[in-house]
Structures are given as structure tokens and as C-alpha cells.
Length: 332
Image 1: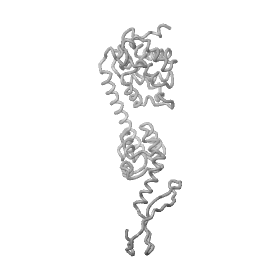
Image 2 (image 1 turned 90 degrees about the vertical axis):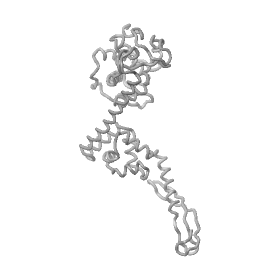
Image 3 (image 1 turned 120 degrees about the vertical axis):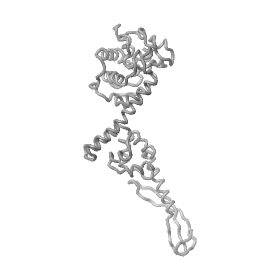
Image 4 (image 1 turned 180 degrees about the horizontal axis):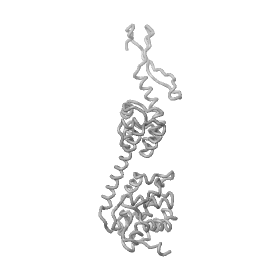
């Protein structure tokens, strides 16, 4: 590189300097050009910019910054446009666009907003909307519209999952569904009752209790409560494609993950139970009383004694019959 003043050849040197970034001391490493003839010095702007980028990259790695793609995914998971998200957090649409294409970095304040409210999903985002409404940062009209958007997304997710479950479990009564048809709200109400009686429990225990509720309902009433198919797995009966079943209950705002690994807890009040008849709730209470004190491992062992599990053998569907389980409720 030649000096623009005297046209002499300039010498390239590595330079380092201390700066303060986000309240912490950092070291920048870059190049400069020096002219021995006239003394002019010029900083290599590209190398200085790259040094700052490395500082930013280390900062993002330390704080686990979300990628621009994950920011866009989080917004879309809420069913929101860039303009709607901007209104919710008090920013501009252009800022949201630049964050999502990577041309703008998240400030510490916005990083906290994304991590606490937007990325976790709909429930946390609704908390943000409610707080913004109380603080007067958004109008009642905007609050109502954005809640409607997220609720529409929730309802769409639930509908899609319910359709997938019906496709997997069948949309007509059969001997594999206890001569019932899957109904998401009935499943939720049955599950809600179990959790209200027993408190938080791990997933496998819940699945075993649902099996016994359906088995006793069929034996006493000729029809299972949930309409789910059950598979004879190694650890006992579980609903066919139970991953879809659990996702449905979470998307319905019924259950959430507990602070203990593999455990779930209830989010909905028992006051919202409407569609269960008194004899159905009685069966649920009796199942909770007889089986609720066992952990999932013990329940797995008990289910291995059931005729229906033995007949189905490993990984095949269980048939609902009048003698499918030992009637431990009537024996007491």
C-alpha cells in the first residue's frame, strides 16, 4: 500500500489495544499501515472490523445467543408477523427484520426478552402481552388482537395433533379403542382428574393410569373413556404413538414439564371439567385410589400380569375384552 501523501511504500504492522465492551475489558488485534517517509498512519478498517466481530462472537457464545434463524422460527411458532411481534415488544418492524436476517445484533435487553418470553413459546409470550397491557405499553385492542393470534396458533396446533391422533388410532369404534373414538377434550378431562387427585407424576405412570381408566370403563360400561389404542410395550401398555398424545395435552395448556426430569404437572383447574359423567369420574377416582400409590416401575410390573398385555405380546395392539385385566377394584 502506498502512502496517499507522499506515495512512499507503507509498512504493515500488527497492532493491539484494550477496549471496554459490555462492561468488560477486551483486546483488539488488527493491522495498521505506517509511512516511514512522512509518518502517516492508517488503520486497516477491515481487520479492525473483523476483530470486533470476534469479540461479538465470543460474547454471543458465552451468553448462548440465539441465531437469526432461531429468532425467525420463534416468531413463526407464535403465529405472528414481524409487525405484530414488533408491536408486542415495543420495537419497529425493521428492527425485527434486521435481527432475523443477521444484520443487527440483539441488545442485552432484547436478548432477555427473547429468551424469557418469545423463544419459550406461547404461554410465556402471553405473560409478556399481559405485562405490556398492565404497564400501558400496548393498547387493549393490540393486546386482544395479539392474544387472538397466539390462541389461533394454539387451536391450529391442537386441531392438527387431534387429526394426527385420529389417523393413528382410528376414527371409528373398534375392539382396539374400547369401542370408542378418540376425543381430545375427554382425554384432557380424564388426565386433569388424575393429576388433581395424585399431583405431579412421571409420564410412564400417567400412561399406565390412563390404560386402567379405559380398561375399567370398558369392563363396566362397554366403552373406553379416551378412545386411544394401547400397545403392549416392554414396560407395559402405552398409547400408540404416545408422543402425539402428550404433545396434544401440552398444546392444550393442560400439562407442562415439571422441574423433575420426565415428570409432568397440571396447568388446568378441575373446575374446567365438564364432559365427564359421574360414573366416569368415579372410575377415575377408583383407579387413582387403587393404582395411584405405585410408581411407574411398579405399575409396569402389575400391567405385565394382565391378560390383555400377555395376549398382545410385545409391541402389538391390545384388544379390549371383558377379562382384559384383573378387577382389583371390585375385589377390595
